[in-house]
Amino acid sequence: MFGLLEDAGFKRVKSAVVPRFRFRRQSTQNSAEAFGVKAVMMTAEKPEAA
Amino acid sequence: MTNAADTQASLELVLKDEIIRMYEEVADNPDAEFHFYHGREAAELFGYSTEWLDRAPAGAVNSFAGVGNPHERANLRRGETVVDLGSGAGLDSIVASWAVGDVGRVIGVDLNPTMCLKAQAHADATGASMECHEGRMEDLPLPDASVDVVISNGVINLSFQKRKVVEEMFRVLRPGGRISITDIVSGKQLSQSIVNDPKLWAS
Image (cartoon, one colour):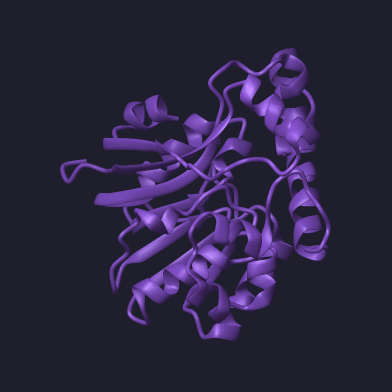
């Protein structure tokens, strides 16, 4: 996602992990962790000159 | 169309139906247990204030299926125009409408016309200035450079065409506009068996 935002022209792209996100079921959480799945918050700006 | 394109188009249609089915189930059976946290429990987990959750209609709170809190960094200001991609039962749109006030505008966009009606009803019940448009996030039903802020909570990951979604967000934003989104990302390439399984993809 980070790369897609930059490719589209967004500037000041920032991301951080949502610290409290997890799946309810432990089996799903385990699978998610195996695939590096996580929730993130992202902010970005469209340049004034765009 | 090539075979690959046919397959992709077919998968997208099945996925659309599965997404509609799953999130209608959350809205219609909020007491059911899903593999993700939802409702007030999830909203509290992600830092939605008690004041917001007490003030919003129970239907919007109970059907909340976000993965974080896009308001935390949105810095919404009075008078701004906000788009909520995948507005669902409307909680994020309603919270946004309180921030932008009656001189601002909040536009929800959702694939599912039934959810749009629910969100609209929830917003109307609180006097929130929200309008919901049925539409796809890959083809937003909005003019170029017409909004100040795009918020979204856990829906962009559901799209097969994420690049197109990002390009659409860029198109509808005014110069100087911004996004504040929360979503699910994967650090590894998902296996083809997951990609080809609409139930897994929609979840």
